[in-house]
Length: 442
Ligand code: PA5
Image (cartoon, rainbow, N blue to C red; front, top):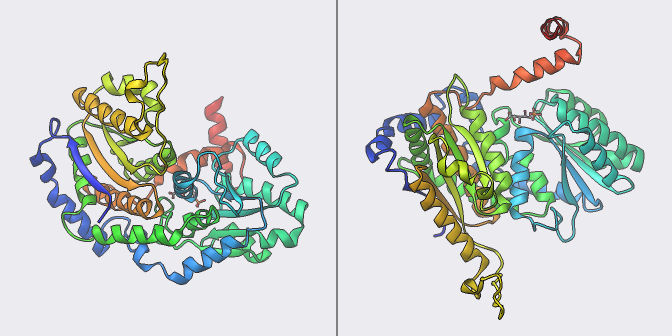
């Protein structure tokens, strides 16, 4: 059966089997903490059995809700961090690179609220002016500033353009069951809502309505995504699984001084998968003065910008390469009689074959340059295998965080910038902080 695999292709020059296996007891403890709910952050383990416990009725409801946007040209998914990156990653991975998230007979999915760019919002409003559009607003807390600003602006525009009645039928809110400004507003305005359960943190929420509704609107098969995740949930339930192996290997490398992990893809559709992965591992592990720094590159593009550093810079990095088995389409390099570009030696070969040789050649070069290499293979980019990959990285993240001895499910450090921003903006309730920060700036 095809499935994703993890191969420690070239890590043994840096760490030994004994170094990796020496973490087995920690991995066993981590698995027990996850499965028995005895570790730090155990009130955020709702993601662990999400795939097997997601009701068919919920998926049907999400698919039916997605259909309500069929009369729209665009649907704007508003959210940030964990309320944005999962959907963006899956939609990018599955979409035609040039049809920009537009299924054959449905609306095109756009994103907002993931930044505070005035020009971004202006240009988005320009695109939406005079067009029928809908909104999916996603915020677990219901109070995050970035999505709240985007939602206020786009809701006002939608109501002005199409009327309050149309807007109420074309806005879906995904938020806490009871708390937060968004829940209150949704109740008052009668929006359709989905709940983000208390026990699922933002970065682990892609397999909830947070990720599933935008993915369904973009025309993709959320049941296949969940089925893939479910098969990985089963595959990583017991001892000696691939999530443990990845978690142990990366921690052994970290202990050996490899402080930076670069997630590498050789498929441009995986750019945002790297962004999602960075949040997952960065927010989960970067605390208490510890944690592997998660970076990502898109090769071969970034070999022409970051390749020099990776090959010869400070030797504190290792790479985890996501290798995609089959390209979806076939494109063959043509023969050319004049051969002025000298490419006839690869004429008749598939573009993907050249890409695969670039991938292998890069790995060998980087290993020779002192960059250990973990390989994660995925048979193809499809809903099923992306579901597997998502759950694999989530499970490995939980295990890895516990091996590192941090709480993988909190993110206390994220509040620091918000406190300063609110103080600088004189938000009511922040009077003391405002005075303190103004004094600091003098
Ligand atoms: O992982 C997290 O918890 C964060 O990235 C949140 O998802 C992000 O800050 C958005 O929060 P909220 O959904 O409450 O608006």
